Image (tube, one colour):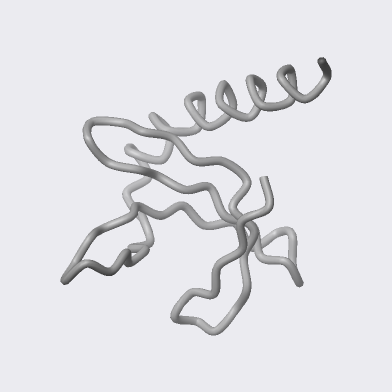
Length: 81
């Protein structure tokens, strides 16, 4: 996946995985300069523009992590062939 975004903290993140869950698109982000800086976000559409809102709800993140893993695993498996 070659998607990069800059968040409001002015840091650049690579989008490691995107998933669709309960009518929302969630993102797993890693800071390009500091791989320990991991964020999770949700895309929101406002006035025909897409905004990323950071998720801080630990219960939701714990629920989403296996979904991100599964999606990443599928992408890796597709690229092997």
